Amino acid sequence: MHIKSQKDFFCGLMFMAVGVAFAWGASTYNVGSGARMGPGYFPLMLGVLLAVIGAAVTFTSLVVETEGGGKIGKIAWRPLVFVIGANVIFGILLAGVDKFGIPAFGLIVGIYALVFVASMAEAGWKFKTTLILATVLAVGSYLAFVVALKLQFPVWPSFITG
Image (cartoon, rainbow, N blue to C red; front, top):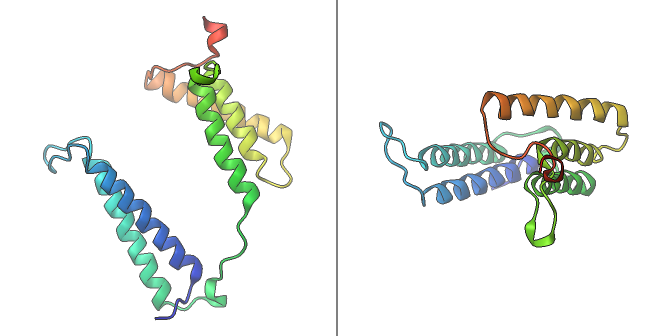
């Protein structure tokens, strides 16, 4: 069989792999039934749905002809490194790492770091635009997670709040 769109083919394979992994991971929890859902029901259904979508995308990549063949280009290393690094930095700053002596810097500092590091993935990023975006996201996250949902996690650095 001939692959008619490489991008769609590998995208579908990735969707199927992630969907199967989530469904498999969710099966370790109590799934329950449709009437009495357990903690594993929702991730299991999302994993199965993602795998089915991946199968559909893979099938269409083998059947439907695309203009130019949908060739895969070079890997964009800069965005990949900065976006993954931004998420790792956010996780470290949000709760800290006791093993390495890094204190918890909280939600606000973590979001500013996340936005600034992730924005460096773009070739021509601008400081002012990034600062505005980080401020809007920090305020919105504070209002949504701390005020509205009343989630308990550090908002400010631990050395400030005590």
